[in-house]
Image (cartoon, rainbow, N blue to C red; front, top):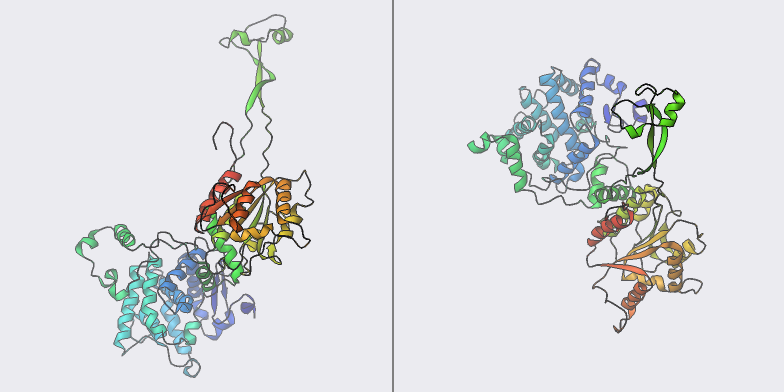
Length: 565
């Protein structure tokens, strides 16, 4: 079927946020006898594009809030989000636009075959009961509860959520989810619910933004609608008289423990998958670290215009009384006419400004090596500050036109590397977000092969290692018996851009190797420092982010003449 080819299954309509499309299964619409409601169906689907969720980002934000209100039942978040946005849209279409949304549900109820559908779930009854409350329909007329007083009470609360939070629907989402939570403990197998899932895969192919960090009020406790004074009408006189935005601000300030804290990669991935994105863990990690890195990148560089240094004759123009007398070009005036008439035959030469010829600065390329041994976190599950620091530095280098070679390593034969020095952001992040988790042994041959035959006229390269004390395995012998010290020294000479090691160590290094008696990895690092490697020590992995910002500023922010930085 054409609808199936477009990705529509299980329902008779769907939206796609990636291309702002609406897909309708016309044969299914005809089977359900809904041909007379084409305007209502299309208006509803368009409502998803213009009201809720409207954008891929708000769709993901909605799911994130609903997931937090459904502990252990987060898998139901897409279904709850769909029901919630349907209520918001249908209530507006029925009341404000005069469309026959209620008649569609009556028609669907008349078409149901009990043998096929089974008994209506409590979720479906509650959902229909909310419509009956919103539109003042008789109990049970749309399939809502008739004798169940608890369900009817919850339906009233649900209708209040839809009305009270109609213009703040993201804030109301958690409350709606809390209302459905007890009903979700029953396994939802009601095909009636599944047939309405028109936003289930709406996010496929999109790039929601801003999900790497929790929103300021997202971690605030979500009240059940029965405990929400805005729902029950129990606001105090002082609160009722305060402006709505003031009440919201007070609520946010009182319950904002997140402080803009970051989500973990696994949670970020679960939200994307709930939004309909079909991505594996590695693809999700690439998106996550790109988004985490963006606020820390250097600004896009501006290219200064050449300054003017000297006057350059460009032509002649009339000299008139009032112009400086010494501006008259007497030779050219006499050549114009032997009879000099001020203001008529007199001319003066005009000059332009010759631009200064400044040599264009060439950025230093980056050769980045990131440790992925067993002592390092898996960046696809938990935040890896090694990966994040590498992403900040590599993307900053790309901004100024540098080329980047990224190598992820754990053992001598466990490494992942870009195909040389590249300009592809995607290729670099794919390497940085990989994971090995094995033993620690630096792949010396990769460093050796990069610089062994590097032409003298090639761009200068800065070699950067992000690791811990395991970096000292770089100084062991390679497979040919060649000393790692020799390989490292040759690499520094051929790179011509310097070398840095950002290392997570237990303690700072001594000031010098002399008279310290240092041995083991400490002695190796002191010797490396004396050999020309700049060693930056962090005591906590999170400090790597500050290092990455400072490294990027020092190496990739152009220094303007006449300024200090």
